[in-house]
Length: 195
Image (cartoon, rainbow, N blue to C red):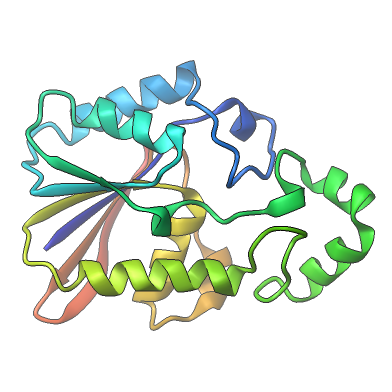
């Protein structure tokens, strides 16, 4: 099984370095170009099915990639980006200034700290793990999954024996395509391509 993970195209929030997991924003002009490049790179792949986060930026990217392809698409909240609650739409320094106590806890315990009205990393990872466990039960050859940086980095942790400390050892740029293979009960990262 080939799992093609694609991070959505760039948004204006990306350019401003904002935390915005739960804000539903569109891709930018650059994001559109990145999605077109993804489409070109994946044009010869016949996808059995596609999964996409419920966020507009992921759905727009998927629509561009799948243009003229026959493929069923499922929106799945489990691959939405982490909900940063009150931190949404703010950069690191704004969070530090507006929420000093919560920011301190967040820095000291990034896995378990919960932003006000948000979710902890552990809650977020639970969604990703559930998604991956279900995907690996399928018998398809090629699956497209259009999602977010935090999700993709969490999938890497899943592959690396659920070692969440690896979350900070990877990057996932807008438009990146990661091919993950699942063969003979073994899951591994085959390639990561920047667009």
